[in-house]
Amino acid sequence: MAKNHRKVVVLPCSGIGKVFGALAREISYELIEKVRPGVAVTTCLPLLVIRDPGAVALVTENPVITIDGCPKDCAKKSVQALGKEPEKTYEALKFYTAHKDLKPEGVAEVNETGRKLAAVAAEEVAQEVDRLATEGRK
Amino acid sequence: MDIQVMKVGVVSCSGEEIPEGTLCRLACRKVLDERPGETVTICLPLFIAGGEEERTFARNYPTITVDGCDKRCATRATEMLSGRPSKSLSVPEILQKHGLKAPTKLRHFGPEEETAVRAVAEEIARAVDEVLEED
Image (cartoon, rainbow over all chains, first blue to last red; front, side, top):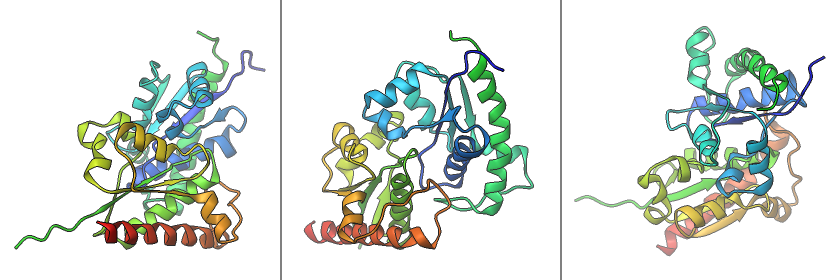
């Protein structure tokens, strides 16, 4: 059994205008609800914008994975604005380019194919969650 | 002759951690889709992650903030980083007003949650009308 087991914070893009924002959110929920519940957790990105103490502590005291939906990289930059570099960053688009047979559609929520892509992507991100959850604190 | 059509900015809580956040973004999206000529939005974290153009959003558009919980991130972030919103809506208050229960899941909303999405969207659309009338 892994030692030094800790939470890994997964922060998706909060966009409501593009399919890859919705995909980022779906991947995060897949991780926290199904693939790595109890280990992968999330918080509201806007809580970091207003510097909510609880959310800031969660992000600064645990390893963080960001999943952004567009090149503006809001999730990554929101973490960097706290003086912390995310341990791992993803762009949701790249999960699609790696799995071209699963084209996501939808804006606020992805369609069934998008959910399948999110499930595949979550399994890939889970490897990183496992690594970060078990490696010693820096 | 060019006619300047004013748009209303809608800033939504994204609330990744709470079902009301999902409700918020779906309701805002519905209004944005149904009122494309009159509404515009911005991703809340862009107030930090974006540039000057994003930070002046609430000075460029009369803005309605829609919050999913009493932390009021959308309203507070807009006030702090962009400008004073014209109106601030609260999803819990809207649900209470309509006698609706808060959703209990984070994703994959269905017919059960659709009533709440519609109710919140209607309140946002009403606020859009009021702002447009005021200006």
